[in-house]
Length: 224
Image (cartoon, rainbow, N blue to C red; front, side, top):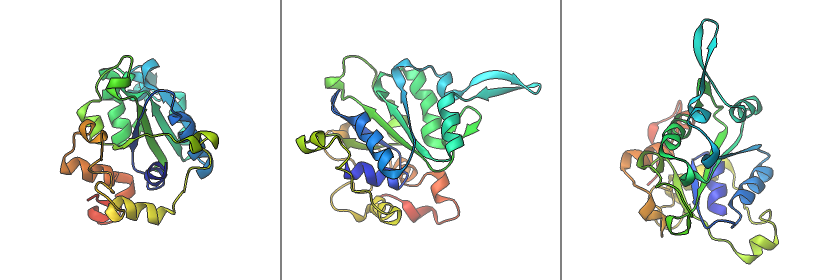
């Protein structure tokens, strides 16, 4: 839960791998409440590619890729958390459309504000009833966390387990300042290691989204 808070505070895209019914959605909603951020939950299994790539409509004599309502709400708020739930139940075509959202924060012809965070969740293949493997391009853009639930977290309703860091501290941790391998999210530990197909270029892209690194040295938020 602390690692999730660090990633969200530092505005780095993150995915939670855990069994069904273990409170991933409840925790993201609780974190959003702790940070004062609206949360939009988008379930991949019930979405179409146009829900991410935009629906073509005629506007002012041209074609406009109209964004869905959840993207419009985040754009109006100017900040928030986009929670992509049940990511591996999304068909490959939907995952391909999601890639631009995660990589460029763009939905159709709408650019999401830089303060919109990306959080995803998925069930490990051995615990999933049905679905698809996470595509390599999408996996390479996400920090992978194995989700484990404690009795204390359940008893507290997930609201008392977050130690929300300062933004500067979170970004320092994302640069590799924390203890242990993969402190910057580049090399995940445990079971998540096998699911993340990492390259050095992909790690740098995760550690420094374009809107975060604008106007600074490209290495400023680079993961180890």
